[in-house]
Image (cartoon, rainbow, N blue to C red; front, side, top):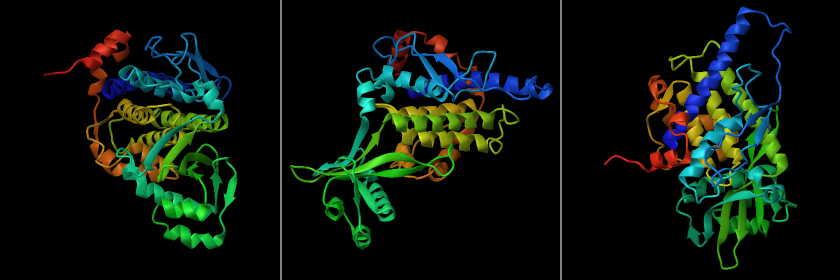
Length: 370
């Protein structure tokens, strides 16, 4: 699934960038009549080929965003959501029983703050898939409590923590210790430094600690998606996508020099950081985010040829880092050495036209070599 998604993303983004580059070249040859290029709001038809069983929208739906490439006569404008929707489509078709939808399409749940729930400890049990992040998440929770000196209860009211509790927070060794400091169920929000808005801190994810009736605790992360939070991250993603396009188009366009492409890589990682803190899907945000990351790198002639190291979960790296630069530094050590400069992907058949129906996609996903 991910391989075909990555190639399709690379192919379609490359076409959009080609349009941007042609306009950039044209603007360098002549002076615009109005002295500057005009940004406008553009409606983009939905491109979900998954059919009625997989679609998150009607065939006539359009997505509206200011986060699109600037005004193009070619009509190939692409927003950040268009880019990620390509990977969402593949995730939907590959696992048709999973409810993989954009959170803002779940109107009732969206307005009430629907959020994903990812436990590391549940009762007396350690959740195998996520427990490896427990110690680090626990330390992050302690750091935030110590710095902010408040948390929220389950009714979202603030619980102030007196300064004489700081040492107890530092000394806490487990969920029971932390719970006893507060005295009731609580949550706190991680920090996510904005790039689009100077000195603004977005609400990342929520670390929650709930005492269970049958014994033990539910220690988890929960990512809320209220309309206000959606709007903030939508603006952040729009700015991040524009930065990716600006980094690649212009003098850098088409480069096969790894060092020249440094700003492109940094911009792609920055957008990935905000995607993972956003977590806008009901399910599948992790694989969608990584597929887009690799698809954008491939569109810029950088192919990932390695594997994610054991014990690393890229989405958690983003969630537990408070700014995009620290996130980038946390994965560069294994990501960058596995990037190979290549243009061979440009010779692949066009994925969208080769696999033009849901049936052909399912057949491709079901095929394998003996």
